[in-house]
Structures are given as C-alpha cells and as structure tokens.
Image (tube, rainbow, N blue to C red; front, side, top):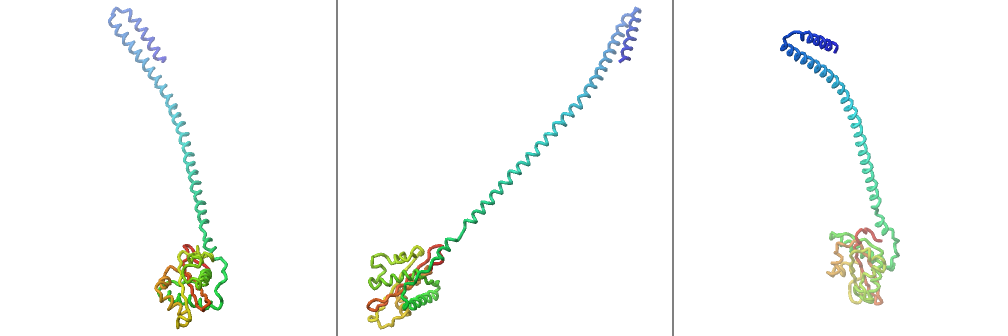
Length: 270
C-alpha cells in the first residue's frame, strides 16, 4: 500500500511538472493512463481483500456440517432397540395358553362307570349253572360265525330275571303292566348305558314235549331254530348279555336272554 501511495505522489509531481509544457494533448493521455493505473491498483487491492474475506467463510461451513450430522446418527440407534423388546413378550404369552388345554383332556368320566359296586345276582342258586351254560353256548355259536363274544353282565342278568319271572303271567315281549320289556333295564339302572338291546325267550313244558330239558336244547333247538330269535343272536352290534330262568307252577321253564350294545364312549358295564 505504501508503494502504491508513493507511486501516486510521483505521478502527481510529474503531472504538475508536465503542466508547464505547452503540449496539452499529450497530458490528457498521461492522465488517463494514470487514472487507469490507479483504478487497476485499487481493483487489485480490493480483490486481494475480498479473497481474504472468502477464506474466513470456509471454516464456518465445515464446522456447521460436522456438528449437525453427528447427533442425527446417534438418535436412530435407540429406536431399533425398542422394537426388539416389544416382540419378545408377545411370543412368550402364547406358551401358557397351550399348557391349559392339556390339563382339560381327562378320561375320568369313563373310569366312573367302571367303579360301580357290583349288584347281587337275582337268579336262584340252583339255576345259576343252567344260565351260565346257556350264555356259554350262545357265545360259542357267535365266535364260530365270526361275531364278537358277549360279556356276561350282572345288571342285564337282573333285568332278564325280572322279565323271566313275569313270563308265566304273560309270555310276550310286553310286561304285564303293558310297558315294553326295556323298562326292566331302566328298573335296574342300566337302560342309559345301552345303545341297542334285544330280547329272546323260550318256554319248555314237560307235558308238551318229549325232549329233555337242557341248556343245549334251549339254545340249539328253541333259540337258533327260530329265525326271529336267531336274527337277534346273530346281531354283530351286541357285546353284553344277561340270562335268567323261571320255573312256573306247572313246572314250565321260562328262559329269558337280553342282549345289549354299550353306549358310545362306554367300554364296560358290570
């Protein structure tokens, strides 16, 4: 700057000195040159100053960009961690729900029927052997023909005994009071345990036949000899039976057999 000022002073002195000369047109050219030189110098100084000013703005932009980007990245990190925490307890709650259903499935209802106290058999002791043999011969026939064996039930036997005792009064599948034979099953408390049931009955009178009274005669001749009775014995549904006998006043022997199929879900009746 000092050099520029000294140059300006020199130029001013020269212009004053030249002012003494009479050549006027040349002076005007010199002045314009000087003025141009001055403006150029001022312009260069101005440009030098502005460049210095621009350099100061560089650290400002760097500082601002660095400061803003750093906190922005840190805030997004905890957001991802919270979603992981919420999904974990949702899966755990479904586990105890499955465990409760396992506890509900119990087979206690089936066991209750098994644990019933066995009733006393109503058949007179002198006829028990006969009744058991009739049951054995019926099962022998069923097994030979590919049918399942019928188990002996004390409950059905007692219902059959009630029916056998009524046969001397009314030899039919109706009871003396006019009701169906299956009311005898309800009387001993077994009716609801049976899904299907059937009754067969025979009568042997010593004065009307020459055949000797026996279990074999009752099963093979009287029962299997009758198509209607045989159809009931041949029924594959039956899995239980009861056999009873009653001897009437005229020495007639009345045999009654009741067959039954247990209700669904029931595997045993005493």
